[in-house]
Image (cartoon, rainbow, N blue to C red; front, side, top):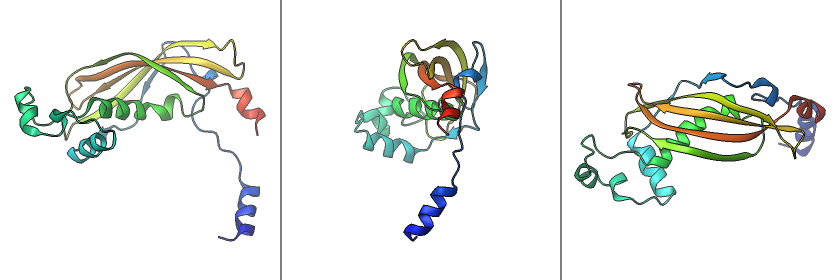
Length: 171
């Protein structure tokens, strides 16, 4: 594409804010996140290799079975976490603002290839930021389940979330 066309496109482009803002959240508010994600053996192998998580029970079916996983190789726990976390982003933190951390992360039943994960979240805390007036701090409790409704993970996470006024002012 020529520089002229790119310049014209940029000049006509309009910001399209995505996600919720601080004012959209209230304590006790529930979210059911998108349609879910079925994990495969390939997902686990690639994620395990890319993150250098070389626990043999996540790569070797015989070792997994020796450790009591008769269904085969269980998914790497970090893959379960990032999958469930990722499903929540569009509803919770896509509006912008720094991630502040995760607490109280607890894993439930193991996840195996072919399992489909779903996620729900509840707003557990909403407060203004003392140091960043254009943001508020929101904390959510997120729960991931498999296709049988069994809990595979739960955790709490917090983000600075943009206030609506600060987003509108930047246009």
